[in-house]
Amino acid sequence: MITADGRNPGDPEPRDLVERVIRVDQAGEFGAVRIYEGQLAALRWTNRARTDTHRKISAMARAEREHRRVFDKLLVERRVRPTVLSPLWSLAGFGLGAVTALMGDKAAMACTVAIEETIDEHYASQAAALGDDEAELRTTVEKFRADELAHRDEALASGAEQAPAYPALTAAIKAGSRLAIWLSTRI
Image (tube, rainbow, N blue to C red; front, side):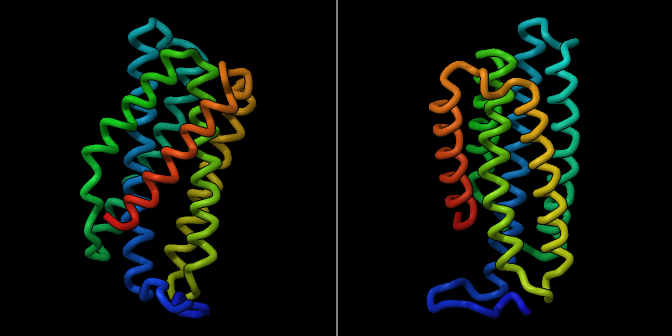
């Protein structure tokens, strides 16, 4: 199968699809780094920098920074224009991270669950759309998807579902994440 197989009228051309994948994934990983930076800052502000939550979030942040480095490199190698929304994602990501961490450790973990479940769906859809001609990119997406699922599982094991208003909190974060994905794919 090649990336162009199974295209419907109105679907992006293969080159456009690949550019969208790289653009939105770089934006998403950038946003994830900013969320974790916001959470880590809030944990420091509240004297929780030596906690188990801080350690877990620091480890997740390291993985997201590595993901971002890969997509930063792909932007350059493939000559893909990044989203113009990065300044907005920087502020929004940091703010979301800080607010959820200020709400408590479980809310910070609920944020991770919401983000990672949305990214799981997003990466699965991308992997299905990329053909054998983009096997390396598909492998990268699939590897990062597995990493994101591990972050979700860690957050669930850390009591994310016990966060105040968990269903409403995660629904709001998922809706915002889906909007950010849609916008970053296009803008």
